[in-house]
Image (cartoon, rainbow, N blue to C red; front, side, top):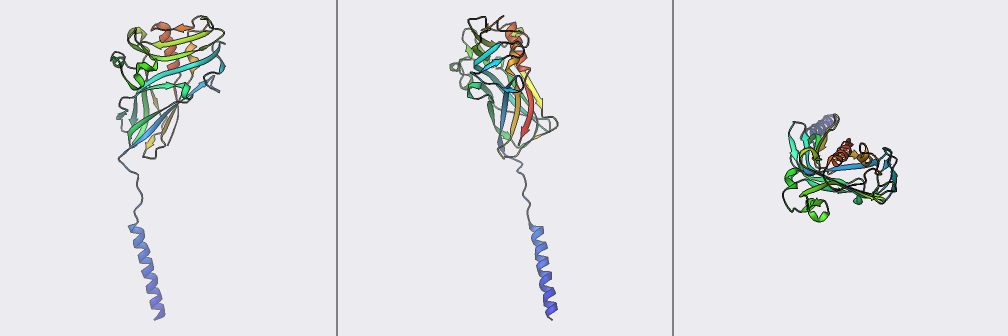
Length: 255
């Protein structure tokens, strides 16, 4: 009789355990919602050195001694490509990256829908429509000193500093712009995540890392002792912008 009761209790316990196991609901990843994705751009000098303002640097391409006091430029129209081939676009995405705020500036992309993303696309500069749209606010405000009122257009990149090699009294100032015709410096860039995908699931940790090399501004035009000032659109401004924009590369993603 005791054995019968013992086996009956054991069977009941096992049955209860099995039932509980079947009823257990496994956690699932949310399929709807939005999150923030951070785009970071690391600026290096001569590959191994971190670029910095107010620091004595030697351009490995020209041998010039340069000390930057200003380095800032526009990035805009940022998009992310989903694994199904569709694109999500950050609304009104115009950002002025000022390296006075740090040499690895970041852009916060808000409202990114949950999903898997395989590519990033962006524009270096400001598109022609916003160059001729009159006074604007935010990152496009003329008060930021990046708008030519005399030329009705934005300075896409501003690099200023001092150099004993400069032809202009020991200083240099390159204000690179132009949004139409042969002098258009506005450039679209895209990067695939090299077979990986960025999983946006709501954890708030998603990051895309790019890199850029400021010394490439002089890759083609040469030393500042030949030309240390550009303040208007033209062939040299386009060449310098193209060379710098060409240095942008994809590094890695974080989740």
